[in-house]
Length: 346
Image (cartoon, rainbow, N blue to C red; front, side):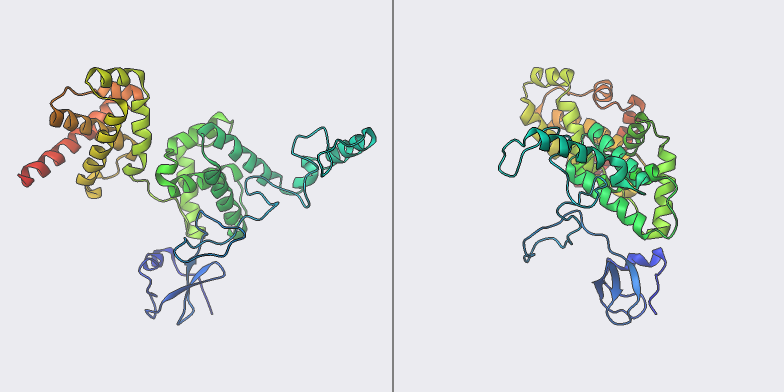
């Protein structure tokens, strides 16, 4: 008989070897299964891509169709289709011609009958959670792919969770955290920003509650948010600095153009982050660590080109909203490691 294995065994999935019989893994009906002994090792979540209409080609990422025409991931849809567009009050036929007055009145009445309450039925909690997701996504300026991936994870966890979900808002906040972590530098949003945005929308969501719910979901489904790497925040930190008016003025005064300075600084930041191993970073906040690495990279860049530094700790703090003492603390560690690497190379 097949049985779910403890979460700790899932580390063997990446190696592709069964922990019991050393057999190979296959994907069967949403589960990772050993092809020899049949043991179920973990659940398989669809990758954040999907295709519609075309046959999958060699070399393309593995994906299953989880979005179908007429069934949108980010809202609760009813059966059938809408009459006109979502907020239409004037109706036309299939050829684009205006309907007569009697038909306008008829379809307006039918559209009002097909109200939100009728459409969502017993899915009111899910409807409100997805409505909150749409609002939060707009405030955080996330793209549709991140939003739809969040909605997919939310619906998937609700369907597979053996326990009844008691806090849908908190669950969708955790799913949003999972989604932005999957998209890496494509959605460089921090955990604190997610919690703050939900609070601004009137919900009692904080960092500690999100982390606690994420651990609970991991024990139930084996799926949890990935750990964010400092490299994921490099595009965002550079954008915040380059678009700051004070930083722009100092860049021009040093004889740089914004584009040249940004390109040189990006390469230097990635080099500094590569010199600092993960074991030395400890439990440091990756966003703050990226800001400090950017500050250190600016000093190295100025030294190499014989120019004065563009960034100061105060200027970096004001542009990125990171405390100066945090930048100073991280910079001390980064500086010692970079200097040790340079002296050993010489």
